[in-house]
Length: 169
Image 1 (cartoon, one colour):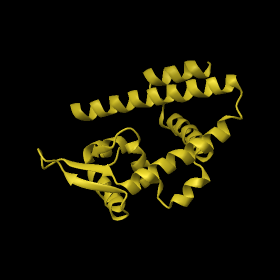
Image 2 (cartoon, rainbow, N blue to C red; image 1 turned 90 degrees about the vertical axis):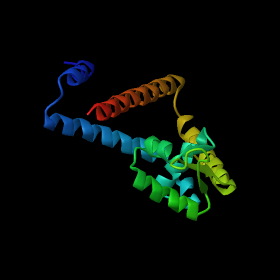
Image 3 (cartoon, rainbow, N blue to C red; image 1 turned 120 degrees about the vertical axis):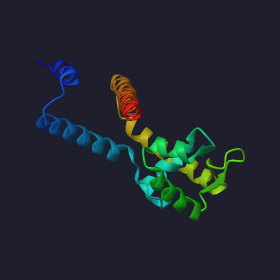
Image 4 (cartoon, helix red, strand yellow; image 1 turned 60 degrees about the vertical axis):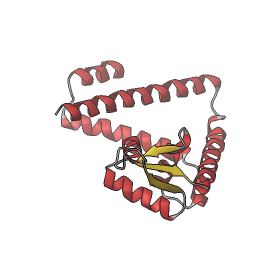
């Protein structure tokens, strides 16, 4: 049986625990390999933890987010998000303020220092990714793009399904 057929079978017939262990090991190995390849050493000069970098990058497309949005984006609990934001507030990267119309809502936005750091993060990551990806042939690049876009869609779909199951419980 081919890999595709075997994987399709797993979706309809969940694999035994041993099979899941092998699947998860393959996923984690691939994830770690990808992470090593695309996490440039230049990020070390920024002096932020990977969690803080992830939090800052949430602001790539929005200048302001609520604590709930941040918590959902990073799939962490609200207490964890509060601690993460506290550290960035202390380092003057973000500001936190209550919503004027609903005091329960807490909004977080980047400070000038946070915006500058985010621009630097994005610049470093883009530069380093370009250095790596320019070594791929046109065919390899197309394969890479198709694969990573497919993975992103599949994971978003799986996460949405998981979240809906949580709601209906």
